[in-house]
Amino acid sequence: MRVLVVEDEMRTAGLLRRGLSEEGYSVDVAVDGPDAVWRVSEFSYDAVVLDVMLPGCDGIEVCRELRSRGRWAPVLMLTARDDLAARVRGLDSGADDYLAKPFSFDELFARLRALIRRGAPERPAQLRCGGLRLDPATRQAWRGEAELELSPKEFALLELFLRHPGQVLTRTRILEHVWDYTYDGVSNVVDQYVGYLRRKVDRPFGITQLETVRGVGYRLRAAPAAAG
Image 1 (cartoon, rainbow, N blue to C red):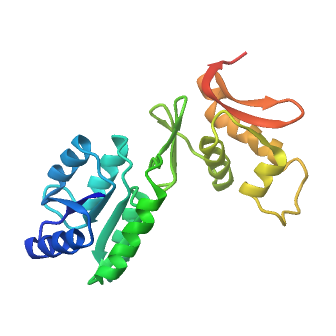
Image 2 (image 1 turned 30 degrees about the vertical axis):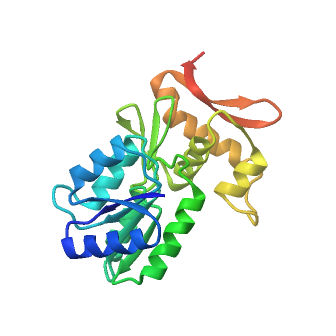
């Protein structure tokens, strides 16, 4: 298994290299953000151990850049023990797990084994489909370059469709995911909110992407069609 360690503090980088090598990993070391982005773009790694505090660009920017380039190697981010904000931003940028410093090597090895077992499926930080784009971390959505003003329920509904593009979602499934099992409101709330969403993501742009599948539910088309 090949692992990239991204750490600018040479003593820590050396300890990580030695510990991982003794555990049987093949280890490369990058000492700054641009070097890390280049290495992951050029070579295949089974996992990346990424420090948050780096020269050039920090670990959060490195992770976001890797995901934007379609590099999905699992990322274990190293953070200061009391830096909750960095942990949250790291996970939102596409990191898979974090480990607070100081850490034990036994825990580091266990977390790496778990990440490598999962493999490297695509996990984009932003969801995209046919001109629609949504960022779950910042709670923003766009049609092309135009930012969409959505209510919390409209945002949750659009996120559900973007996570399942091309799939027909039944009203029951939508209700369970966007509301909950105990919802006791009006029976046509799904139809109402799909209508609200269409008036914001489709109609102002003269297109139809969110379509009705008669008798079944709704589907977000992979590509929009001209309205009418």
